[in-house]
Image (cartoon, rainbow, N blue to C red; front, side, top):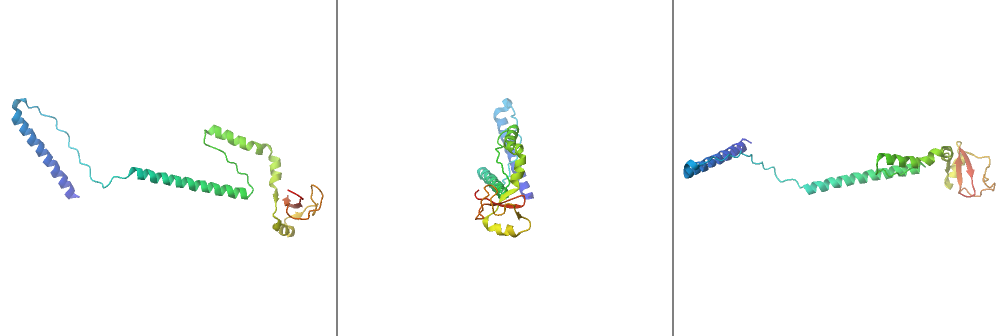
Amino acid sequence: MEEREKAKEEARERKRKEREEEKQKKMEELGDDYVEEPVPEEEDEPEDLGEAPDLQKMQQDAKEALNTRFDNDLQTLEDITKQMTDRRMIVLNIVADGSVENTQKRIRHALKSYLEDRAHMYERAQTYKIDPPEVPFHEKSYTIRRSKFGKFSPISLLPCRTNDFALVYRDKLYYTVSE
């Protein structure tokens, strides 16, 4: 480090001597007409820090990192949406590209039907379809009982010959003839 400093100092000293010699030569040539020119301040030579970073490569790397993060976030949202729909939860996709006010209007508009029809929504949430292979398990369980209609459809009062359209409503097992 000291050697570098010494080398820089020697280079500055040489430049100063060269300027003095040029000044002496001009004074001898011009004599009384000589006007001293302002001496520019010495500029430190920039240290060689190695190769300059490649700006385009840095921008490309940053762009790729952002795209990767966006893709990961999008995949996470899709996974969460799938999990919620699998659990029979309502998922609303709302575009939020505009202003806050417009986004709030879109949210209110999307939720309006659910808030107005809230009583029916609670009833629908208590109803779910059972796959045919699961029906015997639910018939034997003590948490869900057969309805008072038994093996008859509550809609048409016809006997149900299959378990294809079984559903549970308020812990009661109902059999329907069709969907």
